Image 1 (cartoon, rainbow, N blue to C red):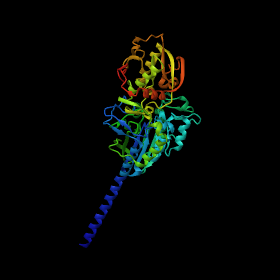
Image 2 (image 1 turned 30 degrees about the vertical axis):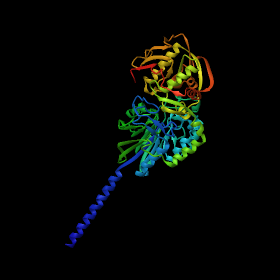
Image 3 (image 1 turned 180 degrees about the vertical axis):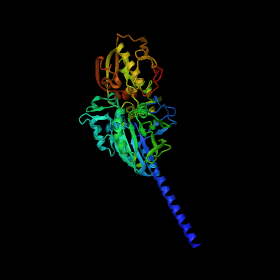
Image 4 (image 1 turned 90 degrees about the vertical axis):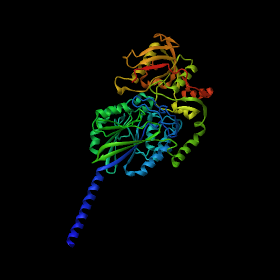
Length: 530
C-alpha cells in the first residue's frame, strides 16, 4: 500500500513537471511585442485645439482615409505623449516595447524654427525613441543641421534610400537596424519620401539624393531576412505607396507609415503585410501589438490613443522642459494677432480656407491678377484668439514674396500640373496637394484626359487669354519648382522682395483684427475626384 502511494506521488510530480515544461514551451512560443509609434509631428511639441467634425489639423482630406476629430478639445503635445508612453510601458514588460517615429518630425513650428529642431529632439530623447525615419521636412533647416540634430539624438535617425553623394551609401551609413526585444530579432528598415527634392529648397539637400523606396526595400530585404525574425518597414512614403509595397513585396510583416497623415483603423492588410499609421501632429499615440508565435507574426492588434486633455494628464517633467524652452521666446511666440470669428482650417487636395485667405491678401497687397500658394499638408485650425505661433504653424518657412508675369498659356499649364499632382498616371509621381489660389476660377475634371481637365478658366470674370500676360503673386519657394510647378521660374519680370510671407500675413491679420471665413471660397470646382 505504501508503494502504491509512492508511485502515485511520483506520477503526480512527473505530470506536473511535464505540464510545467509544456506551459513554458507555449509561453516561449507565443509573445506580444508592442510597437508604439508617432508620425508627422511637424514640430508640434505643444498641444493644439481640435474641433469636432473638422478635418485633421493638417491634411484634412487624405484620398485614402478621410477623418475628422471626434470631439472638441485641447489635444496632443509631448507632455501627453510622455504620459501615454509611460502608462503603456508600466503595464507591459518594458523589454517588449519599441518606440518609432515616421518622420516630418522637427520642422514647421515657430519655436522649432527658432531652435532649428532642438526642442523636438530634446523631448524625443526624454521619451527614449528607438528609431526615426527622415521625412521630407526633416531637411528644412539644411543638410548640415539635419546632421547636427542626428548627433544630438539618442536614437538613430536614418533613411536607407537617402544616398550620400560622397560615399554612395545611405545617409549616416546605416541602412537598417536590428533591434532585439525578448529574444525576438526585429529588423527595422527606414524609407524616406522618394520625391523629397520636389517638396523643399534644393539647397537644403545638396550632397544627397533620394531613391525609390520600392527598389531600396528589394535591395536590403534578403539581407535583413537573414538577421531578423520580424521585419518592419518604417516608411515615409505615404499610404498609397505603402499599399503598393505591401502588395508587391513578400516578406514584410509590418509597415509603420507616415507622410499622408492617415488614421488607419483597422490596419490595412495585403499579401501578409499589415499597414498602420497614426495621423499626425502628436494628436495620437498608436499602439500596435504584434502577436508572435514561433518567432513569426500571426496577427496585430491596434489601439489608437487620442491625446485629449480631459483623458490624459501632462507629464510634469516633460511639461517643465517645454516651459523652459518657451519662456525664453514667450513674447514672440504669444504675440497677439487677431480673432478668428469662424474656424479657418487648412485642406490639402481641395480649396483650403486658410490658403484662400493668404492668397487673397497677397493678391491685394501686390496688386496682382492672381496669387498662388503650394498645396501643403500641415498646420492647425484657427479659431478665436490667434497668436503669432499659430500663423507660423501654417506658414513656417521664411519664403520671400515675389511677383512675376505669366501668360494665359502658362497659367493653364500650372493648372494642368496641379491636376497631374492630384491624379498622376504613375502614383509614384504624386507630390503635393491642390495648387491654392485666389483670383482665378476654374473647374478641374480629373476624369478627363490630360490637356482636357481644365474647364472654364477665368480671371476677373473673363476667359483666360492664352497670349495675354497676367501679374502673379507667390513666394520664392515656387521658383524652385516645388511640386513640379516649373512655370514660375519661366515667368518674366520676376520681382523678388525682401518681405517674408509669414511676417506680412501676421501684419495684415493684425490690421484686419477680426478674421472671417474667406468670401471667395468656391473659385475651384473639382470633379471626378481621385
